Image (cartoon, rainbow, N blue to C red; front, side, top):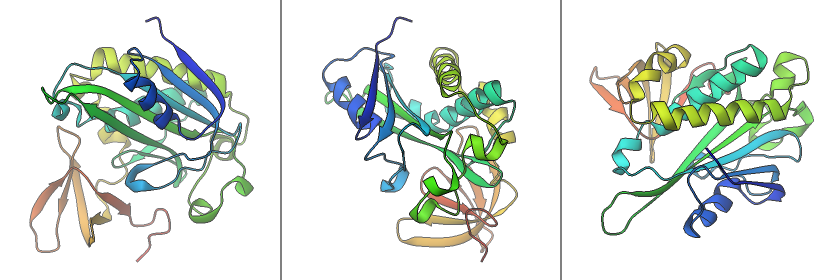
Length: 253
């Protein structure tokens, strides 16, 4: 695939930049890379710390001709792609905290933010941008505020220097494979996701809007939803919201 790659020293957010390029007609496969983000974003409106030269901050644009519900597993599939890329470069495969945090040694290694725009008349997807942030070279002093005690980097976890360029190349290849071979046959990576998902079989705290509840995570369903059992014994499949895992990220209650 012939692609356009925009490389920035500093950008507010690679996703914001690429969404703007998409509205201007950027082609399928366009990529934005940055050494630093000053307004990096994660799920649930959170910020994503992106210090200069320390991580891989990457967004890719796709233009799939489909209804938006076909892309429900996309964030989870992207998490598998990141796991595969990290393993190719380092030999170590991270775990996944549902739906899309990558975890290494019990700490957050990477996050994914998927954003889409719809066609006004058809309701089909006009474009979708997948943004990925991986902590590569950060040291403890690089993590501040709420992530200081829960984040890690590849260098910290593995005790050596990981090549960001090799990781970027592997990630791009895995995302291309996802787009070409897996996006519309998501069952191909379901077993990989289930093996990597650390929520299953554990007590988790489910946050949906202002509601907070302790539940048991039972399994991942065929659409990558998290099946949970409530305290009253009822079973539900969760497809959105925030899930904290007991014993991870400081959740011990």
